[in-house]
Length: 221
Image (cartoon, rainbow, N blue to C red):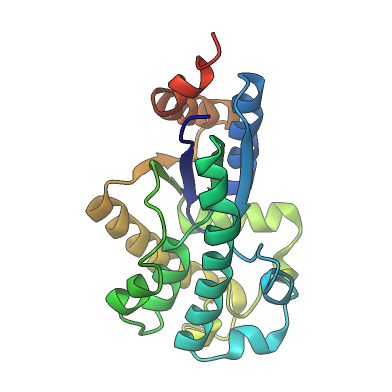
């Protein structure tokens, strides 16, 4: 089989990355393209530990936490992502190396230092930054009934913005948005607002992905 592709979704919590990654998977598979979805905290060696919500994980210093996420991602890169690309799969990453780099940069970690952790990571064929304003993100949390589940780390409360989770969340997400936008501009990410309906956003994503994968779709025709 020919070489596959790596499509990355980046963006803040509650922006709809997983929803649109799954929609893209279904679209690709409907066109006969083999797909694997991966993302943060999904490695066999560290995934369960990071996802467990163990308070100690996010209470580590930012460099230690950066090393944990890098270990998680590099394990997936070596054992899942690279072999899948070589086998002709489209790998969809629901977050990749950029989220941990951005989050820890807000906590004082040098971006060049973080980038060196991923020196052997393959470059994505397309990185899609899904965007939404902080208040819209908070509204989604409220409508989902999950305000009480906002973690200290997710709300940026470790940065001292506020002792009120929702207030800290808005400030933290504003800073994340600025950092993501800066990364997108510097690295040529595709930025897509999620303020439109899910079908509209998914359609725009497909319009951008199709030229990158069309040779895989028509490979057997």
